[in-house]
Length: 143
Length: 456
Image (cartoon, rainbow over all chains, first blue to last red; front, side, top):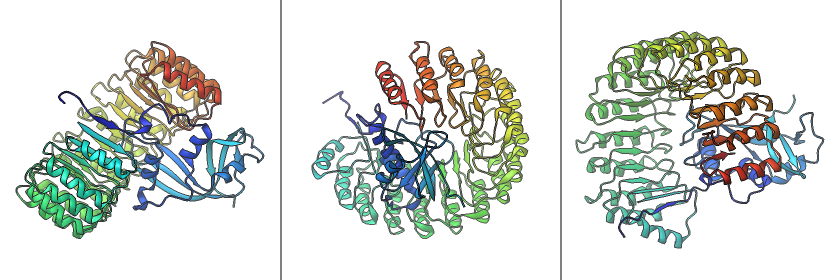
C-alpha cells in the first residue's frame, strides 16, 4: 500500500493527439457542432465545447481562436464539390450559423476563457479527396 | 494521491469504482463529468470519511442547489479539513448561499472558494459575505466571476473585507458593477487591513472615472502584486491615472493585465516609464489595444533600459506591422530578462520575422517562449526561424499557428526540431494547412522525440 501513487488522469488531449483520427475527423471535432450544443450558461459555450472537443486541456496552451460551424457535416462536404477560389479554398454556397471563439485576456495557460461571437457567415474550407480538412476562414454574405 | 478527470460521463459502475479510489485521495477534480445532485450524496460521505481530502473541484457539473446541500453536510463535519472548494458553473442559485455560509463560518480550514459562473446574485453573495464575517472563517481566495452581481454588493463586500485580514485574492470579473461601485470597493480595500495580493476586475463596467481610486489602492497596498482591469474601457486617460499609483514607490506590482482597455500609442509613454522603472513588474498584457508601431517602439526603448526586469510581454493584436520589427529586434539584442513574447495577430510578415530573428539570435537574448500566430508568415521565413530554433537553446516554446507556412515551411521547422541542438518542447501549429504526407511526418517526429509536443 505504501509508496504507490494513484493518479487517474484522463485528459486525452494531453497525449499525442487523438489516436487514429483522420484529418476530416479532426476537422469535424474542432470545427463542427450541429445542432449547436446548448450550455447552461450561454457565455460558457466556447469553454465547454473546446474542452469537450479536446482542443483545450491541462498542459496544453489555450488556442487563441477557434470557429464552430453549426451545420450538418454534409453541408461542408458539399462545399468541396464547388469551384475553388484563387487560394484553392472552397466556400459554402449559403451562409451558416457559426460561433467564433476568441481567447479573453492573454494568458495561454489554462484555464482558458473565451469570448463568443455568433454570426451567419459563409465558411471557407480546404478539401482533400472530397472532404474538408481545414477551416480557412469565414466571411459575411456580400451585401 | 490525486484524481483528475475531465469531460467524462460516468456510468454507475465507473462511479462506484471511482468512489473507492476517492476514499484515499488528497485532491479530487471531476470537471464536466455530467454529475448531478445524486452524485453529491456519495461525495458527501467521501468528504466525511476522508480526512486527508484538501481539494475538491467539481466545476461544470449541474449539481444544483440540492447537490450543494448534500455536499455541505459532509463539509460541515468536524473531521473535514477541506482547503479548496471549486463549484464553478454548477447551476447554483442564491439558495445555495445559506449552506455555503455555514461552511464558511464553521470550517477554518477552507482557504479557497471558487463559485463563479453561478447565478448567485447580489442577495446570495450578501449571505456569503455574512459567512466571511465570522471570525472562524480564514478565507484567502474568493472567486465570484459571472455571478450576476450588481453595484449593491459592494457594501457587504467591504464589510467582509474589513473583517478578513486573511483575504489575499479577490476576483469580481464579469459582473456589471460600474464606476460608482468600483470606487466604493477601492475605498473599502484601502481601509481594510487585509493584504490583498490579487485583484481581478475584468469587464466590470469600469471607465477612467474609477482609475484614480484604483490608483489609490495601488499606492496603499504594497501587497498587491496582480491586478487585472482588462476588458474595461479605461482609455488613455484612465491609464494615465492608473500609472500614478503604479509608479508610486509603495506599489510592488508584478502582473498587470490591461488587455482590451481602449489604449492607444498615447499610453505607451507612461507604459514605457513603468516598464523601465518598476523593477517588480514581470508580466504585462496589452493585448487587443491599438498601440501601433509607434507605441511599440516606445515600449522597446523601455525594454532596452537595464532597470527593466520585465519577463513577459503580451502584445498580440496591437496593430503592429513589419515597421516596428527593427526596434523590437534591437530590444531583443539588449534585453536579457524577457522570457515570453506574444506578438501574434499583427501583420509582421516574413520581413518582420526575419528582423526579429536577428535580435533573437543575439547572445544577450534569453527568450524561452515566442508566439507568432496569424502574422502573415509563409515558408519564406522558416529557414531563419529554423536557425533560431537550433541556435537558441533557451527557446522551448514556439507558436506559428494560422500562418500559411505550407508543406515547405512546416518541413523546414520539422528539420530544425529533429536537430539535437534544438530545445523546443512545445511547437504550436494550429490551423495550418499541410498535406497528408506532412501530417505523417509530424506524427513520426513526435514518436521519435517524445520530449517534444506538436500541438495542432
